[in-house]
Image (cartoon, rainbow, N blue to C red):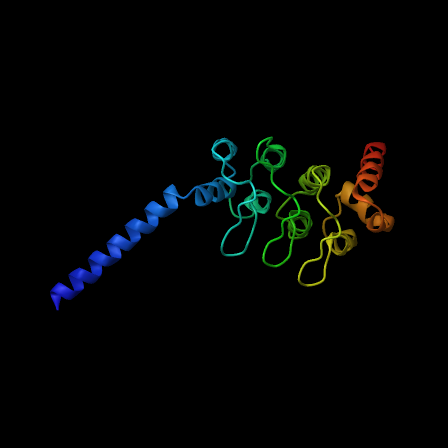
Length: 196
């Protein structure tokens, strides 16, 4: 009986050791951890090594962009803007701002939802939304609940996250839904700069 317990314990130790080794050496796991921790140096190092900027978690399908945006929700807040820009503008391996998680949410939808949940400041929300839109984020992505970013901007405009000037101006212009992205960005950026 004691011999059987010892064998089980040994197998368990070996399994935990293998799992820890796998997590430490797995590039996808390492870049996910870097995104979750807001570690821009580690992110850029792993991107230099060829790890995809479009890596997603196996549990929720969250992209690195979404993890970087959500990071302050569970840790000491860091400035996410350089992290988002690093992922989107990384020359050899840029992130796609239109990849959705398993719930169908894009990084743009997530940034508005996080502002509504008071996990990102309105100013950071506006800045990150502008970065995502400049990188080609689409506003017509609809999640599995049938909600696009305009749905969440309408909720935002009810006053729950009232200081988002850029997103409010985007949401108030329903014509943006029916025009191409290049024209949309031009109108948004022109309107954003005229409101300063």
